Length: 341
Ligand code: FE
Image (cartoon, rainbow, N blue to C red):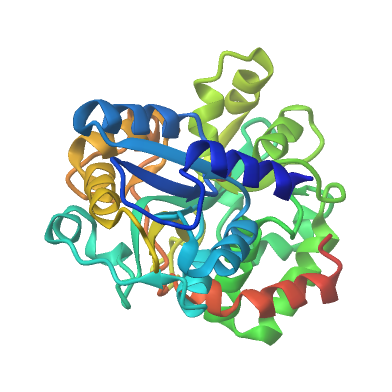
């Protein structure tokens, strides 16, 4: 049913038929799920007159679609919240290399794809948040330490089917090896406050409700909660403090992931697609992201929002983000073997 719906939607949004011709438009297949995106694309349309069409679905559905549509695909850009899925799309031959001096100088060297198939638009850290009533900052240190017995029944995290957790586990496998990752997962599951359920926001709400003390969440959700108009969300945001794990001298830094874009292999509106990526990584585009979604900017000349800045700077795990795709299957196997639902 979903598939039929999307097909009809595509036909409405994008000229249907066998002949692919370039129009004054750009077609996005996007995994992003934030209200800032609409604003971003409206601004771009106003500036350039290029219409932005968006099809939203989860990354694997979009990859499947790109694959099935092949040369006839109307997609120009594949937008994700996970370098792992961009790696997967590139590995399947669904992307082409991106060449633009503007983008190249806009984005931070550290966040770039070494193979040139995708670009970062923002990044986010998968951090710890803790109850500001029941936990002291001094008791926290690393992701690894979350298996410590002192946290029995205290840890909140969403399900392992979620891409953010899969990317985190991939980073742990890449850094610590499979054996230690299995032990880590087992230890963490033992410390769960409840069976994994809900979104990242729901884990923070559960801390506020006293159901657990520490949650593993993406950084920007704290900014979103603290700026929410819903009282429950605002209260959840206020009940926790932010902690960046693995910051010690000999530690690797906190796990980050990018939200990024790949240029589709058969992009019919390639010029427009490049223009959009140039805009999104420009100062204006980046400021729209940081001030509305509380993500970190991919452009080092733009500062994070005030709230995000107030958390201070942190050391980033320098792992090649393509590893988040390369170790994905192994990560999923470890979840299954160790009972992380
Ligand atoms: Fe998200």
